[in-house]
Image 1 (cartoon, helix red, strand yellow):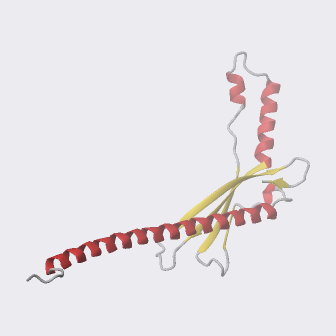
Image 2 (spheres, one colour):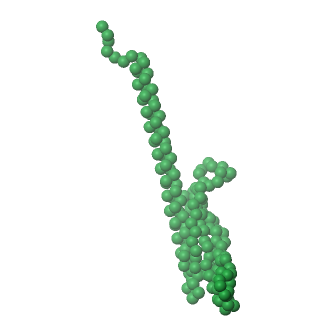
Image 3 (spheres, helix red, strand yellow):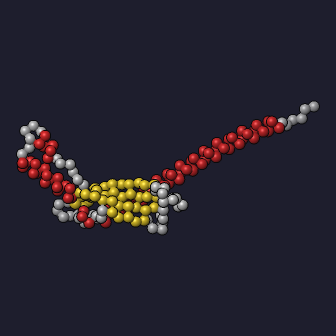
Length: 167
């Protein structure tokens, strides 16, 4: 008479199938966890970047563009110790637009060239590029490893009537 039950081979095959399923499930869960961490990092960096850009826009809103420093940097305090920020600004340089006038049929008059150059000078004096970068360095990362970075650029405009600048 044959006894009912599982043989050793059937039990081993069932255990191998279960182990394979657990490995696949574990890898899937690990990948999801990494995606969540990366999403949280990108979201935090974006919010800090937006916050710092708004701070800088408000800080220099009613001031001439010459008061915006070429470089500045700092951190976000105890709330975000792994995050830092960096400000870089520069005056913009426009290409020589008078050459486009002289290239057309009939060329350009001296008055047209003078007007274009005056407009170009005015724009270059009134507009300044401002870039904010948020950097994240994981705790324990070496200095050789580059930090994660996100940047945002805006152009600050100083109106001719002396009313300050506007992003």
